[in-house]
Structures are given as C-alpha cells and as structure tokens.
Image (spheres, rainbow, N blue to C red):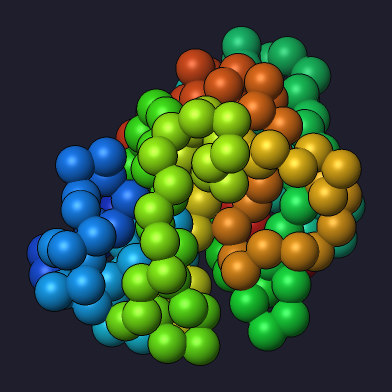
Length: 192
C-alpha cells in the first residue's frame, strides 16, 4: 500500500480544553465543564487531517476488520497489524485522513456523562484500573465534541468489537509498541 497523499495539517482549536492531562484536577474540570478521555471542544463534525509530507510509517485503521496496520516501518516491510475495539453506535470512530496530534504516557482518565459531557463523574489515575491503559495517541475529533485516539485497555476480551465511544482500544502491550513507532504528525487513515 502506498503512503497517503499529503494534505495540509490542521491543528486543534486553540480554545480546546484538555481533560486527560495528568495535572488536571476534578475541581478545574467541573469549573471548565469538561471531561472524558481526551480534548473536549464545542461539538463539531470531524475534519480529516494529515501531515504535510507523508514520509515514514503511517497507520491504516480498518473499522470493519477491527484492526490497525502499521505501514512502511521500516520502509518496504510488510505491515504489522493489531486487533482493536472501535466505536459503537451512535459513537462510531470517525473515518477519513488524520494525523497524530497528541501522545501521552500513563494518562489519567476523566470520566464524564456522555449524554452531558459537562457532568464529570470521576477521575482514574494511571494504573491497572485505568480504562485508558498505558498510552494515549490522539488523532481525530468525534462529531460529539471529544478527541478520539488509540489507547490501551484493562479489558482485552472486548477487542474485536464495537464497544467504545469513538476511541480505538488496544492491548496495553500493543499500544506501547505502537507508541514507540509513531510520532506527532504520523498519518492515520481510518477506513470503514
């Protein structure tokens, strides 16, 4: 598979409020009215993003296969695939061309009410009970207003299914391996 064509890189809205950074507190989140496993913006339709130059490895996520493929790493090598869980109805993982825009080791998880994202339900620090697992790799925006990305899971038995609110769940060891092979700006192509 050839590398994706170059597209202009779009950056997250400067007014985006971060909800998953380790230093964010519940009091601050309650004040800001944010929560979830990523950046919470005003709801808007996901816009495909990609890097200016498609050089080096890139990712292809095939939603119907429930797999993500690490392509061209090293150049000319066969793809490496990982089984994933994807977004369920009505929170399907967005399709299109994107680029990795944030990478976090041992992320916090801020749980919010998906029917009312201003309602914070709790915070889970890094550790074995954290639904975000060991890594967070953000690449897109859900049409519901929060970032989506790849992250680990303490429930690998759910992989291969559509169970999330748009994010892409992976085995912890797989998301750690993927984290070490990609960088900010790595293209991500999400196919139905």
